[in-house]
Amino acid sequence: MRARSGDAAHRDRGAAAVEFALVVPLLLMVLFGILDYGLLFSNALSVKQGVREGARQGVVSNFGAACPMTWSTAPSADLRALACTTVDRTSVVAGTPYVKIKVPNGWVKGQPLVVCAMVQTNGLTGIVPLPSGGVVTSKVEMSIEKVSAGQTETGGEQAPPAGADWSWC
Image 1 (cartoon, rainbow, N blue to C red):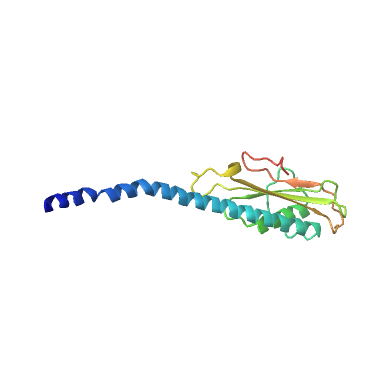
Image 2 (cartoon, one colour):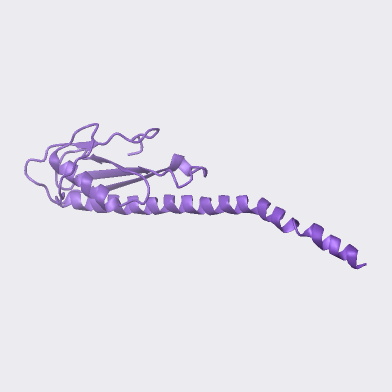
């Protein structure tokens, strides 16, 4: 009898390793999905807050310092500085922010200033499919409170990441 029970225990010894090998890939996929979606949600919150802060700085004519950015339509130095302030306040975890600023009716007190931003989030693994291709967007419209002398531009935008456009802004 003893020999038989020993043989059964010997045969079951490899079952735990096989079960572990079957379960680990699923657990890793769930873990990577949590990480990728965590980055996406973090970027969404950062972009939303950064765009709000950038728009607030713009409506009170506190544009900040200029920085080098590539633009598809070149705005004035003030709007470039505002875009840099927006990017700085966005502080996304993963991805590069892109900014578009619109002043549809010109710099007139009470008229809208529209600040939009988007970030392409690729995630850590690239395996997990993210909604909207991983593009996070945010748009804020505020009324201009203070007008600086000489502001006549109506906006500017950066070229969006591949596969995205500014039609939503």
